[in-house]
Image (cartoon, rainbow, N blue to C red; front, side, top):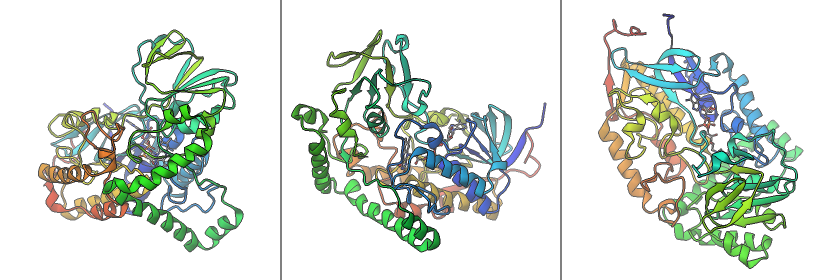
Length: 497
Ligand SMILES: Cc1cc2nc3c(=O)[nH]c(=O)nc-3n(C[C@H](O)[C@H](O)[C@H](O)COP(=O)(O)OP(=O)(O)OC[C@H]3O[C@@H](n4cnc5c(N)ncnc54)[C@H](O)[C@@H]3O)c2cc1C
């Protein structure tokens, strides 16, 4: 049998998380690593989501790596092609190409106790690694509801994250199912082209104005020639969002003023009181992700658009049927129905020291220590693990904090000579009990909505209930007391390959 390649570190995924890990590893002097990617290009979210209108909803100067400032962002909220280009440039600038292994989906990762390493089965072969960094993304695997009759629908069906560019929208009758962050970018982008647009809305979102504009040449020049101005801009964007956290996490009643702003935003675009009542949420703003758009409401008010305020329950031939009995014949169904978030697919593929998968270990809900490590899964680190999501700021801040933790983790392994660290169950438990105690007061748990932040048991296992500065402090270094140090006899190391 061919010998399996061994590296010190294997990273799964090449989105912001995986690429960020690659840069950080190199900066720490670790060059013995691979980045395993199931697709044939880097970019993650920004490779897969190329639907019409796709853009970030956190300003670009904050939604980018601190170590790779980009003075050339074209807009305050840049579009998918520019973010994808940025990630390609990061890949080249920081010398990540030699580490990338495309078409290498990780099908199984099993911890080998004796050898103290991970055995990986990938689409491009088997390999081993001392440390496994999972950066498979929280919004990476599209979720399409199991709707009776969908399979027999004669038209086109696709998810927003797998846009069918071969489908001509012009003059077609299209149903967009869902009204989340992707759907509200798609609706205004396709409304002018389609004959009839049916927006199937189970729950309306709160929508605020989007302060989007082109970044002018003077700003770009200034940020390029005086980097301090760029840092100041980023710092201000960050600070504003840090101040908002109190309202989300502690005093949802402070969201009232924001709610008034959202109501006024809707009133300005929607004259029809019936449509307005369909579009007015009955939960506290912030409970579900607040969406930003200037053209969503105007698109809904156009004569060729209809909002069906009811859940999709059935597809009968080419007709979509909703719970309130509405039937509409369509040529295509676009699902903007989100992703497998609280049931992340990689959890079914990772097998820990006890021979159980991470999904089995998490049967009562996802839980990790400082969002990163799980007891019984030695040397497994997660980027954007449980309770590290944000409702209002840039995920890149959370990714970079976790990378500080990863870097310190590797230093601890070097310093102590341990083969692996295994989180102590007590440490994982107390970290998560403290998190869940804080959750009760947050708008995500108490705002009166059901959202993808909550798992099937209603537990919030996705959002970080504090500031990004607090998370940065919590992940600055590994606390040895929270881990058991595992050692293997030198003779065994490297065997079993
Ligand atoms: C449309 C959209 C807009 C968004 N806008 C924002 C925003 O404005 N601000 C913000 O903070 N966040 C935003 N997000 C969240 C976004 O997901 C994160 O900001 C960030 O991009 C996540 O990076 P990641 O590397 O963790 O995951 P991803 O970008 O999802 O990358 C994961 C990678 O892992 C690969 N992968 C998965 N499983 C395997 C496997 N088994 N084997 C090998 N490879 C695998 C995938 O192919 C993918 O390339 C948005 C998300 C979406 C979908």
